[in-house]
Length: 457
Image (cartoon, rainbow, N blue to C red; front, side, top):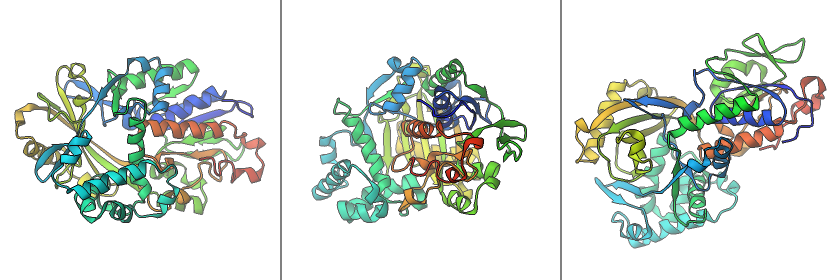
């Protein structure tokens, strides 16, 4: 990745996959890079944690055959050849019953929908998969679009519950580009050459991937500072450099935190219009339970739920991951997506959530008993997924701020995509390609400040 300017000192704030990849690519472009992370370890939402005596990912992640950016980065770490690829199955829990929806025949037998409804649902998915650019879909409300294509009955029985599961009370505020992005990713997986969904995992989970990335960063010469909370980012009027916590000076700073935490540390450097754009970004949060079980649940990697339930899906990770990697145990995730300001749900104690989730889980799967659950742990995150409202791409702030050498890039800049590791890596690489060529403050003409990254993404 060539750079047109002399090497500069860069700080990348935030050590999730976005920050890690951005730091790596800026260093490979020839810059001096420091990666700063508040937590004691790198990884962000992809970091591992301990569930009982098992170490695995805090949140569920999967790699598809079509996730070429992820696979390439795994290759740079020397890990891509260790990936395990598995054909998975999908379940549907509706009307108090569990159905398999893993192939065409099962779809045609699916009782909750009549034949016409099934044909319209299939046609909707096929039609969406053929749309190359979703920009026109950004102008259309997702509910209006799905009702028109699939019909009212299919929307009420399938689409509305699925949208509510992912977006809660905000389900009717996103554009049709939201559902298009989900369909497009799954179709890309099917079109990867095998004509079926092959999901992949790395033995050892993302902990192993992150360990490999840390080794790669160190080998490339990136300076790593974990356990370093950033409280302020201010401009030094004497040098034009950016000061982190008042003492660490850099030519350029890229902040990869979500909008609100980012503004807390550097908002004073932004203009009124920029502040308004960042504050207008709405995030979905997540409350995600991880549970270790003695026995499997149903063998579906994901079970979509259309009945009322305290969680929005069941992710049976050991339908994908060999239980041998988990000491013979079975791992499930029970996610609940909520608005970031849903104080009622975020205020619930671990004990309250565990009781509520466990009761629903045992009701769904009568073969499970309470003594089959050997560990239960809960994660909470407020800023996970930016809400893709109508005309979303037109509302996004530019990455480079009016300060010129202060850049804010986060998951909200994933336009017409779904939040996953592959999209995150792609965003970081696209941003790095442009940021790597931005001249230092002393070289920049005033007119360049406001246009440095206009249209870059």
